[in-house]
Each structure stands twice: as C-alpha cells, then as structure tokens.
Length: 542
Image (cartoon, rainbow, N blue to C red; front, side):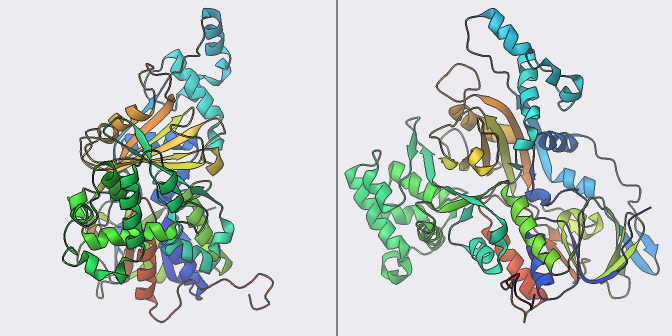
C-alpha cells in the first residue's frame, strides 16, 4: 500500500536534506511553521552527505552510469495548473563529472614467496564475485585483496563527498551553540597545518605566538616580521592608516610592501592562514585581512587550533542535527520518497504544491528546494559556474605526523597546479575510518581536463603510488571527481515562492552556506528570531 500522508497542506515543503535546507527546516519548525521535509535519497545530507566505503563505490558507479530519462519530460496539466516534471537522477548526474577510481594492490614486504602467496589468499572468501562487482575494471589479485579488506571494514568509514571544517569562531559554531544543535554533535581539533615548498618539503605553519617562537623552519628575522603582522591583523580595523591606499589592491602586494613578507612566509600567510582558494591577485587587502583576522580570532578558543572537525562525517551529521530540531517541533520527514511534478498556478505563476511518487497532491505556501528538484524548464545553464576537483584517498598510515586531523596546502604552481590544492587528513579519531587507516580529502578549483589531472601530481608527493619510496604511506583507494557548484541562473519563470539553495562550494568551511540559510530565513520571516535556543527538556513549556 503506497505511503500516504493524512495532512496534505503545510506552511513549507522542503525538498532535499542538504546543509542549507536542514538549517531552514529547523529554523522554520522552531517558530511554529508546519514543515514537510522530503528527500528522494534514502540518506540525509544530499550533496553534503557522507558514505561508508561500499556506499561510496555504489554512488560513484551510479554517477558513472547512464541515467534514464524520466517517463514524463513534458509539461502536463493538473486541475488547471502546470505540472512540471522533475528528473532528480538526471540533475544529480549532471552535477558530477570526470569520475574515476583506482584500487591499489599492496604487496607484503617479505622475502618469502610462500608468505606472499599465503597473504594473497588468506581472505579469499572475501574476494568473491559478489564483492568484486562493485568495481567495473579488471583487478589484479593484490588489488582484489585490497578491495576485499576495504569492503570488509566498509561500515567503519564515514567518507564526506564535500568535506568541510569549521572555524572555532564563526557563523556556524555560534549557531550550533545558540540553537542547542551542538549538543547532538562531537568534534576534534584540527591543530596542524603544513605547506609544500619549492624545496620539495612540507613545512609546518606557525600560527599562534607559541608556534612562531618554537618553529624550527622560520628564521629569526621572519619570526619578527610574522609576529608584527599577526599582531596588526588581529585588530586591523583599529589601524586604518596601515592599509590606507591598499584597500582594493592585491593582498599579496600589501604584505610585501608594508610588512616585507615574501618567499615561503608569504605563501604560508596567503594560503595556510588566510586560506585563499584562488590566485593571490584575486583577493584584495580588505578581504585578505578579514580572512586572516577570522583565523586568528579562532585560535585559542578550543586549544591551539583554528578549526574543528565534526565526527562521523561533517555534512550529514550537522544536517541531521538541524533536522532533529525540526522533528522535535513537529516537522514531518520522508526519506527515499520521490517527487514527480511541481504544480504552478497558470494565472499567478505561484507554486501551489507538488505530486509525489504515489500520486498524492501536497500543498504549501513556500517551497524550499535544492537545485536537484527544479524542473529543467525553470533553469538556465550557467556556463561560468565554479567547478571543484575532489579526491577521496584511503591510505595505510599518516603523511606527516600522527594526529586526528591536519591540513596540507600546495600553493599555486607548486606542482603544476593553477589554484591552491588543499588536503585534509583525518584519522580514526574523527570516526572517518578504521584505526589503522587514514583518509585524505583533496580539493582545488577545476582547471585541467579532469579531477585526476588537477590533483594527481600533489597526490604523488604525499603517497607512494609507484611503490618506489617506502618512506611514504601507501594508497589503498582513490576516487577522483569533479563537482559543479550550481548557484544557477534561474529563469524569470521561477515563482517567487520557490526558494532554491546552493550546492557546497569550494571553500573549506560552512560559513557561506550558513549565512545563506540565515538570509533566506529572514527573507521568509523578517520579524522572527532565527533559531532561538531550544528550551530545556525538563521545562514544562516545551
């Protein structure tokens, strides 16, 4: 019997359980709005989600495969309204490209042929055809062995497809604290940052006063320059005369001319502290100082770290936290539930409701939706939209130092890359992987023909791909893919009461998305408080 809802009219219907949609679901339910929150996926998070290892393989194969067109691609009429068809699978598939993955066979280091043969076959029951069906390429015996072990531990992985970290002082952390959602989450500190230099080394970046004084890689003269600059940047608005005339000039020029910062120290400030994600000339002085100040103010709040990492996969866990708030205040949830049509009134051009997979009509005053659910007729392709090249790499040991979380930066042109490459390393402490494995998340703005082309040279500096450098960690699995940031140029036909949320962008944090959620809420409910604190469960008023 198809699942039918008794209540069919709501203040807001929300499609997709991504980060922004989930914040809005919690905020709207919290002020008493009736919310119906639906997702075609069977999991929370949308394009922000995390998967176990087997789910990640299934997801990659789904995106690689041919997507059938939906049976209804033309506009229909429904009770005097335009019924615009939704093709969720096609929209999702078009958001990703250049998807390819590699499984690496790792030989056991031994002089005994018999021992290698035993190693190869000791888990042979796990390398059945049922297991190997998850990959489309032919595998060697050692690659089969690697795959079998990864699948055996599949549920111990929580792999983010759009990994993010969180400033210790910022929009999201304050929202998690004030709303009470933070009580549902756990975090680890990201307390180590490294930057690749033209000497083919990875230098640890000093950020706090303690780091600067104890650093072995920064000269005494550079330490003085850095301390003088960091002291200024922390309260730069109190010294406007220092940056007068440089406001719109490149941040790089300001650092060189006003503080004599150059060379490796300049790269560290631009790409590891300010976290510029484009070319240096694309960021002006005011922007650069604002980013640097935010970083510095984040230090010391939770130890000697500027960022926190959410355990068990950031995007999906944080999204679920806000969905929980929505459910507590009456929000209704339906996962694994497809939508067939959006209904648009012909005379007013307003959204009036939708028709779900069971043919049930559901109505609301507003529709909030990820772009995956917008009918093609209401979209115009933006050829200049940002694309992000990403990789998820599983390795057998840490790349620099042991620890829960670290960040490594490859500045532009350091390995033939046009834009900075950022590499997050997570350990078992973040609940991303088993205790004897590590996960690397690589990302950069797309520039080459594929994600693999954009990232592979950096990966070769981090891990022993060719089995010729035993000092490096060994890769077990790598997935490369490109994700389109669809902020979408929407056609004038889009009804005013349909609110579309953005995809995950190329930034390392959630700040832009958190700000968007707040702005959309204030647009819908201008006189309401955004996610006030949840009353204590023991309070009778709850």
